[in-house]
Length: 460
Image 1 (spheres, rainbow, N blue to C red):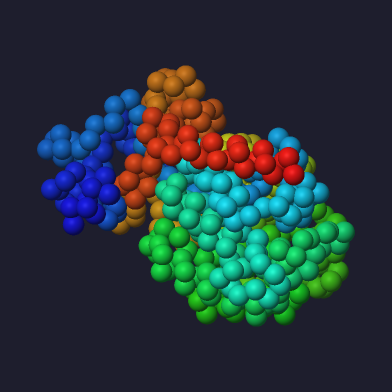
Image 2 (cartoon, one colour):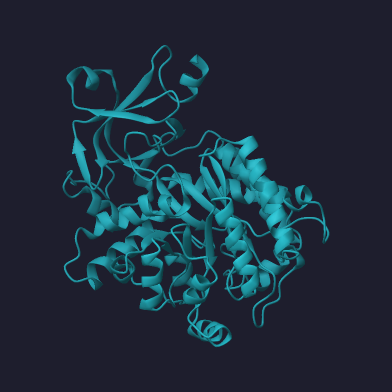
């Protein structure tokens, strides 16, 4: 028990440990003079203003604490393309991505994921949904061999200390004009679900259930025929897995899907049984109001990728319309053009503020998209500082110039509208401190390996 207590950041000999920042975000309000406590499992047990509890808690002076952010769709291997090529709309990331994939090994993917997860952690993200389509080995290789890259990504998340929803999407055929390498193409739906079962069992065996778990789905309605989408939906439902699929990014692609299926994209997916409370439509910029209402009626979600969409000039969903339809709005970094979820939340806040009629607390809605809604879409246990949830949180320095002068009433808006990443100081995941003073214990080693890997791959 002592080892478990120490690993959870709780003092030796104690059943729980606590923290007392200058302010803590509880619900949609920052509270001053409040300590919060976690037990040896890393779960929050209580909040208190009692003098004895305030004296017992670890003082965190000059900072405010917020629930860890949730990146609801990321593709870490494309971090290797930053500054060298703009990832394309296809899963391979364009011509530069095709060249990279021809050389990428599981260890290379591990190095890329380690840096991407470190970058996310430094931005206050404590849970990431990493989309890993890459397969290994020859066609027909045993599932364990085909999953080498996916398992390397899971290992990277564990060693960096970030929660991982490992998203495995099926791609059975290239879209119009796409050229995809074999390692992105699943060998049929049966082979895909067999690999998913092996991966699900490995994650369950090697990691705690709330540290790493599986999310599945068709890459898109264009990449998987209707019968395949239906079979994947049935598999996800039978195993109680969350499901994601990427929606059309252009009006031409949306029109082509409508022509093929005789109805809008989400309507076709709903008819195939994919759209329920476990469903998330990634992208969402071309979805019609009726499609948003279908998702909302099913209590599903839309994951916007503002940074990736801005880099390509793609449309983005209207957050107010998503909310009005009853769907959840989550946020993701997508192709890794930037790994800054506060910036993605800034887009949501701006759109809520400018486009909604009399929006209630746009900054609070944007933070909700970056925390609770992302967690709900992934089936993650975090997303808010509440009793029973894990102690996943980060702190921001109140003396950092971008936040200077903010009080509890204005801090959320100040952070979302103008807060800088350098304001983030410390990050805890499950009560374990993963970032201290803006630095990770393995930061030097991760940076060194990534730089060497990128140089080698680019040279080839």
